[in-house]
Length: 194
Image (cartoon, rainbow, N blue to C red; front, top):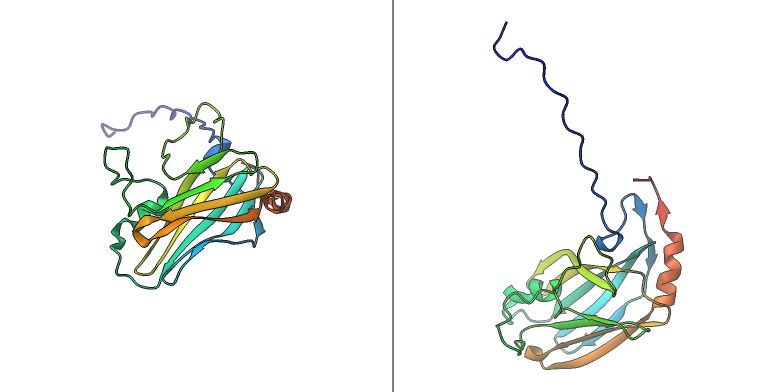
């Protein structure tokens, strides 16, 4: 008989952690799709487009694409700018010109910008829209970032707003039809219940 030949206790039960609906798309659901796109700005050397709307019953994933004709700009900061987290923002009221400002205006007057990087509590439902980065990347002259938006946007127009002072791009806007996006939630298909 070995020293370790002893009866082992039953393992403790796995804790059940419920993920809040505002934290991301539901598991086991194929989204509906909206093919709309919003060209937020287009200059001779810079293009910013919002597209690929994947629509779930509780929110929307979308892609923000940035294309640059030249890669002369110091691109090391671009992924964080698109991620919506100004990591290199100095401790002052000013925002560096290199920071690409991006936001959304909803038809009910609520808005979100990438200058607000607070994360909602997982224990209390947020009072306003939640938009969080879902990953992305790129390099050189092309960058993409995924975003999650909760809840579904209100009916009407949804306006994307952006400016990029280092590239001399003043505030510009482009709209998509949020009613059409909301309707695509009906096309989402539950594959399995979680």
